[in-house]
Image (cartoon, rainbow, N blue to C red; front, side, top):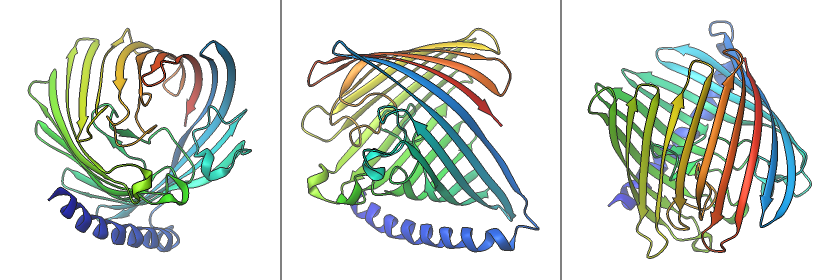
Length: 332
């Protein structure tokens, strides 16, 4: 039933995406005088030091993200994003290296665009956009990427009704596997705040591979919970697919905010090979287990320095990797 319903909804979403893109391009000039464009974004520099199976390497990257938004009135708005990145080598790249070629070091693209529509407490986004599935991105997370062939086309919705918050998506990947096919995703997620401090939720989803050679289509379910205790937050998520083996994933962690400038976190995770929608599209490391440690410091409300240390092990091969990242960023 979910598969049949997803097929009907997907056809509608693709039509909506085409209309949204056409409207975004045609209305931007018409409404320029009446609807000024607002710009914001970020500039970031990151250094990485990696030790994989005893072999050390390092890399760095610089990234510019520029967002443009315009209010068209009556709940409608248009959005777009320009992304630019330079990498010392492709290991830290946030772009799809298969799409840009093995020698690409500099990438610039308008990689997100479309329409927003807000009615009541629900906001819809129609167009090309990143996708985040689950409470912690355990199932799917493309929010950290940029460039072509890394996002999704379709319709997403999010909103809130009292203690209940909800999200849903009917989208198609922008050829994330290159010429092999465009895969389709259908998801729904809801959280319920039992008290101001305690929240629990659930996620249902389906991933349809366009071609059987890409993998096996799968259904997935997940549950999550979070508890805030003063300056500390505790959270967890568990997911499972209908695949026959290696079909489970989980993460749990704690974050602590010392003050308005300093915070830390620790997150333990295990993502099995078939325990997400597909490889390398989770917040964590695919087919791996381990722990992430983070520390963040804000110099001002717009300028920050963040550290991440990853200690992970590949579940299949047993290869161990440590990864230390330092990121300086400025938001404008």
